[in-house]
Image (tube, rainbow, N blue to C red):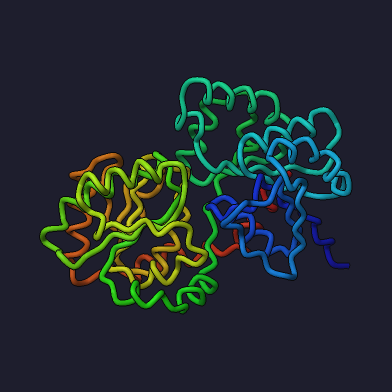
Length: 356
């Protein structure tokens, strides 16, 4: 008699196409499981396949989504495995486990080391959320060894045997297919380097713009495309104007399919100051042999074939970009060896095997 396949539900705050949500979508697709979101993104939502069930708790705010989540979870209270990401949501679900409402197994994924990333009231709010909810969690998934070490150090009341390391997945085939799409004609003719992510301070796009300012004179035809939207857009536009880079640095806004940009760029850059692990880095590595990244997360300094820079350091990033653009032969084979065992199927199977 064959073993019964576990019934999975993947839960997230919104269907905004950010790194954490893309990972949940990959895992849900690999396991043919349903998705539950507290609310629908106003723009830039995930492209969810028609054969996957996706439910939305609220059409309004995230807060109303939280308030309606208990009712929406009713069909999944027992005999399921619930998989969540984002600390506040993880903690809320963990609290529902602690009070006995949610009896299904609960797996939570850490999308970032928030207790070292933030300070002040925001850090305090995360600590309170962890304390209330995480003791009810069955399994905690960290992306890297350093993230796990930080988690265990700051949350000693969580049984460390429940905290595992599982590398982020990447669907190589799907990314290669998406990269075949055509760029807008003007962009297809351009010579550019590319970065992508939410426009927030942690992504270090101001550092990247200042580094680009240092190399612009030697490469008069080169442009910098930054894909993404976010609250720092105004500040970045001011910096671009101040450095007289309006014709050279282009904020492209949210792009539904960034893969053709990654593929056709002269180089791809991750400029983050601090991350859990930048999923966009894996996408760039699959599609482009010239990838520069700051050492913004544990494990990045161990990746073969990429060009490494110090985080939050204009001079270091400038040097790394120059070195990458001046190098004629790149280590594409080493890069592909690094990503080839990160399939979504391996990701979810490894996590389920670790669930006690």
